[in-house]
Figure (spheres, one colour):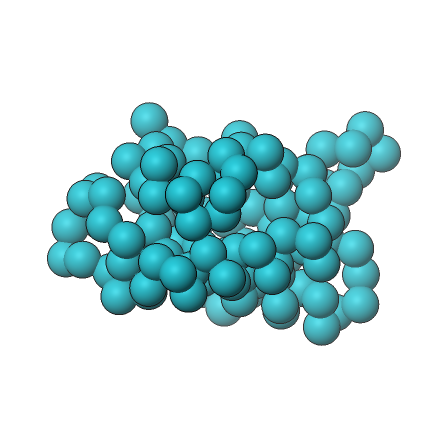
Length: 123
């Protein structure tokens, strides 16, 4: 099981609209061959307790929040955990969890430079 997470604009219904474009990446539990150029990340539920401990709130509670609100939380949580991933993506290590959070934090920072409203969506 996993979360699908993205940085995107809100549509008229308040859900995900246009996803932020980023450099192509192959991070996460699933990815497109050759990478995907969108701020979308599949994250295993294996990191759930690590996220909750580092963030101080359950990870899914960040759904729909503005990047200006969640970006700093993600960055601080990633720093607490460390960002050196283990060789095994599925292993619930602090480094794996912190690495995933830092990717999201960096995307929040990139989106803030664009000057448009972007939000964190977790499904």
